[in-house]
Length: 309
Ligand code: BT5
Image (cartoon, rainbow, N blue to C red):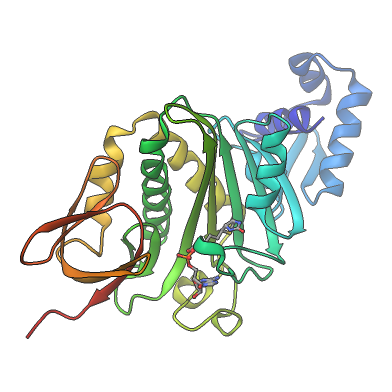
């Protein structure tokens, strides 16, 4: 059903198409075409009937079909106006065998960050989880997280938002380092092979910063409200491209990193490491030069420090 509607929307992207032409192209009856057009209108699409056929003149700002229409990445989109957590939802459908599926929500009531921290997710944001079953070992999964951070940073930069990436996965404003987006990657698998990976992306889009924790900001505050469907689509398409060209991820990540060359304090478990962030490894670990040795950090919280006077 959703697939046919997506095909109809794709067909309408380049201009008007007649009902009979759609029926032939999709191998369905004319009355089925009409029912799908009505369903699209119900979903918020403006489809006008003119002398040249059906014409798509407006799409809704957000929603599953709004994102799916024109999406190049081979992902199925499941949209829910409100969920507890898109990552939790994606986990549930992973148990049922789903793959290449994006769970998307306007609002989360129980959004989660790393280490079970809470993630504020009011209506107006872009909260999504990409569920994949890549044939890769668990050790290289962090690279997907870096790829997602690069996809977000590049998409926002194209919208003239000045942002960069703090290791491992925060997208921050370059001037005052407020957080615009975060990523939570979860996976299940064995030593040599991943069963599934869920890359959860939280992007503060059309939200008042007052509704967010201190230290956070939103696209509304930085560049004004955005078309969330278009932004989501661009992020997904970019992310998909990076998954197919993983060798590019590290160089692009380095180009957008705010952390490299900075003095950092890393908190991991009950240990603190202070030093100069010098590079990342092939699997996305941060290398910190403490002055005595170079420590490779695979996970932890990173704080940017002022340079030593
Ligand atoms: C993250 O964790 O940055 C990962 C956030 C992932 C959220 C997405 S939304 C879709 C998917 N479904 C989910 O349930 N989660 C994912 P972390 O690095 O641990 O940062 C968490 C910290 O960021 C919190 O302790 C707060 O200080 C802060 N924070 C909470 N909500 C925020 C927001 N909306 N914007 C910026 N910072 C926030």
